[in-house]
Image (cartoon, rainbow, N blue to C red; front, side, top):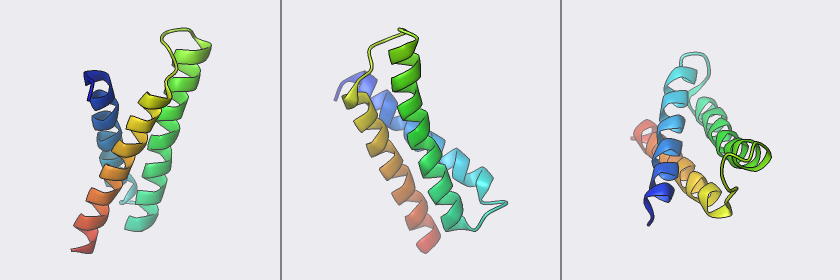
Length: 85
């Protein structure tokens, strides 16, 4: 895996975990997880579409977004496992 894809994956995991931690104070844990996951996906998509695409700061990449999606899945699975155990 290239370093760029690993960075996308890890940042997405961290976004899910941090958002979930904050949102779980005001929402039920699984609702907080759903919102955190959705916002993390939105962040990745926005980065690719707006920052890389419209602002010409980079090249929009489906592979980068796929790495974001995998990171969100890992983060959500980690939260789900922690809450379920």
